[in-house]
Image (tube, rainbow, N blue to C red):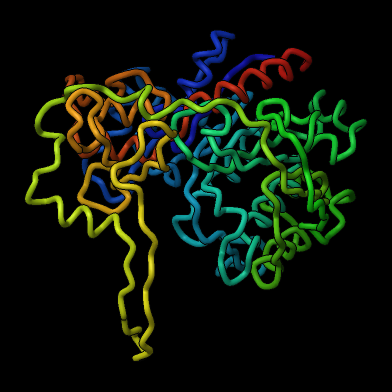
Length: 434
């Protein structure tokens, strides 16, 4: 089987870098990156600077536009669909134009992934999202993830997932993310997994268990995320936007489904087995190991700004009044100030480098003075090469990405070595496909 990739919501190329580091023949045939509401597409242009642009089957450069405007049928065929899609409200409803068919909430990018699954039928899928995906929305815990699993089941895929704290597997950042691995029921791998019970897939036999080893699993529980009998539904009818029964499953989930998904699990034909697993801890990379010394003066905190930083980082209780006049006390605990160099870093956000409670402040290893982390240190925390985000290719010209946007891109990125770990296991799986 060819080892080709389609990369959605590509950012500055984290998935691609992770697979390229395997040196095992993976080829990205098409990608898509679009930052809504931004005139300048810095992440897209950074990606193009490193890898060049990609043509779809119509011969058009469609990588830098909203993916919802792309005809999914002209996306090149691919073995593996990857993407880090946003956590949003995935609820669905009957189409306004017909009593049949469903529509997702406007702008929700999960439905773009589903459209590509329908149009291109990639045998394998690898997705990344925030850890709260499993518990959203707060008013109906687990509903959104249930909708995703139902969609996979309806389209003939099974799926496994894990919430991974990158620092627990050797990285320099305590970044928790949900990874989802799905594959068609017709793959050779699926036929092999038919002989393995769900608990064994979660604990030792599945891709996630092999990439991220665990010590134990508990709180094992089960549920169904699909209620109609899909075994007798014609697949082509289902792919043609579905049957009334399949639509009703998604709509019913929006109305009533909730379930406590664990940090690991497996779904086959709509039946879910999930558990809370404990990682087999590896030695993390310390913040000190990625820190530069004696950096430029512009990164250091000015003495007159120190009180503001101490207040933002400190514990506080503030009386507030809600819109309906209710008074309450807003409380938050302290954040280490400065961030300790002898531990992995906290999770980096898109607001990194701004005067913000979540921004990292460290003592420079050379001077001992407090400062912000540099753009290079931000790249190292995510596992990218130094200065990965420095240059962009725009209209045939190399331009430097603004410093603020470099931090923003890294706050949106994933931890590259985690992709390489999963890619190593996927290489073994692909080797047995026809």
